[in-house]
Image 1 (tube, rainbow, N blue to C red):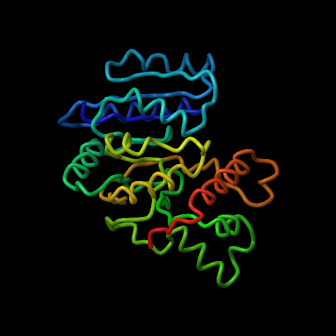
Image 2: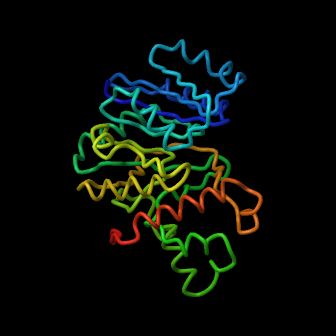
Length: 269
């Protein structure tokens, strides 16, 4: 098996169906499989997704509990047999039939690359999603959600962390890529032990990319390929939302864990 596409779902079964439908239209010179893992699977979700289990190259995994992103993804990856893993969010839609072929070809041609991601387009706005980031700094993560982000000195730092200056038409090495769509080598995934399960929902992507760089591989943004997403972020919100939105509080907890882990480590420049 050349490629294993892993989709971890939590309450987005409708988008999963659209995702898989578009994947099945991919034209490749190699076999691939789709692994769909569902956290806190309800009876309704199981009924919606069960027909996918009848497709020859689709595996369904139902988790009765919400394992979180890292544990759920790690468990699903253990069921994968592909040389390459594609970590894909439920809301992704593959509109070009050669997306999978091009991503795998890129990895096979560029042996120094450990993780790559395509350009991502928000369906609603048609804008390029800012899926590239600089390695996180806690003070800037906090500032991004408050009026502090507009102050001189802080404003420039936030813009840099969000890579607002990046030429999103250029293939290039970057600090880290959001894991809404990754392609990576399975042997590297196994060497690094998958995602760090100390993080429940967030921050596992900059952590994994940091470890990819540490292992001597590159993290590469590859905009020659485009995928589409709904543009909805569960971490979206400002300071006031912190008190009413569980995901924001979890984002902060995971961010603190990340900073503690890398307190004494030098970030890539």
